[in-house]
Image (tube, rainbow, N blue to C red):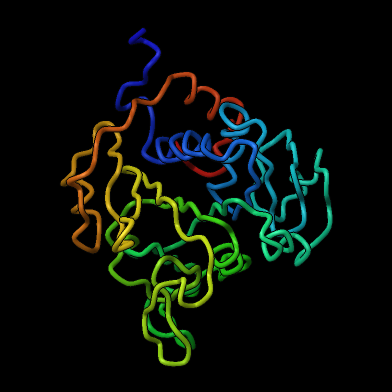
Length: 268
């Protein structure tokens, strides 16, 4: 049975992240999710094929439960209309969120902080004069506010996993209160839900029930606790971590040959 497992070196860190995200989505079979652009599209397609066939996926551009024959390269890709049961437009694609019908949101970003706040707006400087302007919010605010829970997918680097995001695009567990800017619990602002997990290239992070601060739950094979601590911009708790299950050769094969044969997202 050992030969069914992949060895370190048989896959990239990005592939490990996406495959583990697809596994994590087992928790949401028979539920409704709204996904963002980028690698969440890849992980969702893999999950639908392997683990969560009854998961219903919405995108903010108005498609629901699509069955694309090829991997979409963005949420604007017309491939997402194939086999869809609902095809409208933006902002109609976000309406199920505000009605409380979306069980989970699945997003990416440029930065994430210890409370699960995500930044996809700018890096460095200020809003009017940023060092680097990013793609922006799209539906990321709506997802973070209205989804019953959120899952974030992002490369694990010190410049990206930070003490405090440069700009709070998607609210996590502690958010800014207007107009003072004071950081308060999201419940105080009337928000339901909150971040469930951050799945990175090194492991799976969860949030403490009391402090709501991120901690390491699972470490991927070949990764050490020090690897995660050295790649995180704050003192992250690794004391509760255990090693994650190895990847299966079949998972890698399906990801490469069925989901993304053209390596559209540069994972390998």
